[in-house]
Length: 402
Ligand code: SAH
Ligand code: SF4
Image (cartoon, rainbow, N blue to C red):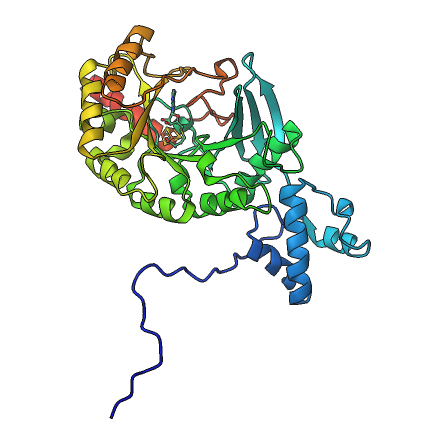
């Protein structure tokens, strides 16, 4: 006779992967940078340096608090760590910040920082203060491979993913500059984060996820996921994971409602089309009427700004039953840009159609244009054109000749 097995039945569904520590890369001076390590990796870094597991656990907890709650970078200021332990830590570890090459302030109060990585790559972050909030616009890559035609970043030649420490480092630096340590829940200037700086965050998924998890951790920076927005140009295969593993608000750079126009201005559309993208939005975990998906729509004169475009936008949003709001972004010009911004009257007419259909459609006021800090103006000194940009120019020249 067979007895029923006592082993639990396997439950189908999502299984959390066992966290695997990252390989720790020492810096040129042999020390390990603790900024950007997950809680587990921080503990492993201490264990690898021969601390007893129990000690390592305790020290990791203390360090986490000093690093992300107090903003301390100097081990000798960590008062609950013994005077003998402090130099031991300083010999083996550092708590870094990105190097600031230039800091600029716009006439409207927007601030832009040009940052440089250890290997000499430049990237930017922007802080946009408002009456009731302050938003930090964070970069996820140096440059961007996607080459949207209206975006300056897309013309950069150099592209590299930013590491978690370089992404979190932007938030740390902003907090330093605003004098917002220790981290407190109320009355802070930096209240929101948007992953809308340089780069496509879903092409650097693991690092962006790991960085945002640190930013959201309640024992440290403690920014709520409701105050963080990730913007994607439409990397459909990664959108579900973004919802599940990061869970922040989603913004989608739609910018056009026909295949012809979107293919031209957001070339990624040739890979993942509008229908597929909107279906992925409809399936985005966590989207509902209280947490709507933002559709970004850059207003380009005579390109995507007609009444018909506005009506089609409404139709699509309704067809896919999307809890949506639309952000109308006046095109921000940059030297050599192939488009112009729509007129204010056109933007208003477009807005009225969308709004008239019951969809919120604020037109953004451009911020920081005078210091090239506005959407799509970010581009560092790497002036040379990207391969994709050169190919496109060659293609255009051919077409003009033939
Ligand atoms: N790569 C991501 C996030 C960074 S771009 C994405 O594309 O969504 C942030 C926003 O600025 C996007 O909606 C982008 O389309 C928009 N943008 C890019 N260039 C612009 C420009 N010149 N004027 C106005 N908005 C622009
Ligand atoms: Fe990259 Fe976004 Fe610029 Fe497109 S708009 S080139 S995806 S940064």
